[in-house]
Amino acid sequence: LSGKYTKANPTSEERRFDNEMMKDFLDNSDRNTTIAQEVDKVAQQIGKSSSQVALSWLLNKGVIPIIGARKISHIEDNLQCVDVKLSPEQIQQLDRVSQIELGFPHNFFKADMVRNFAYNGTFEKIKNHRYSQLID
Image 1 (cartoon, helix red, strand yellow):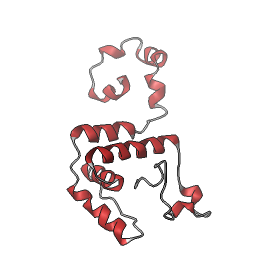
Image 2 (cartoon, one colour; image 1 turned 90 degrees about the horizontal axis):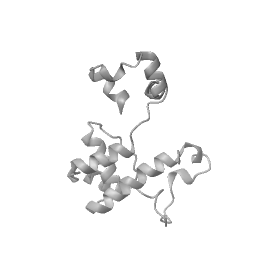
Image 3 (cartoon, helix red, strand yellow; image 1 turned 135 degrees about the horizontal axis):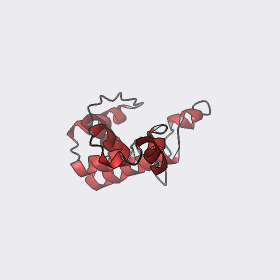
Image 4 (spheres, one colour; image 1 turned 45 degrees about the vertical axis):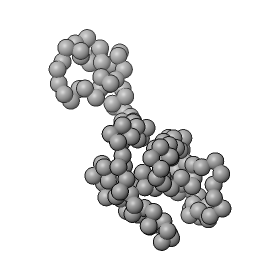
């Protein structure tokens, strides 16, 4: 999340996953790239590094991230995340782009046909907080 895998002009700095043995460990999916690009946008908005924004975002979620820095300069940059203040809108922006799709059976039960069959057309009449995530 430092930005070196999402920037149009990556630095000439050697990257951990450029190694032939490690390249299969880099999940360069469209979803992960989109998340990293959103982190880059927020970092640019507030004038901080992508690493600082990503780590601050995790700290806001109650997660204690494990820093995997290879250089002292990376550690120094990462530790500045404690001074980064993300707005509620920025946190929501990052939460939204990184939201996990629940998959089966959740997406199955969201289908109108299944809902109508399972609840005999009465799903909308049910008032239960546990069903709110199925409606969205």
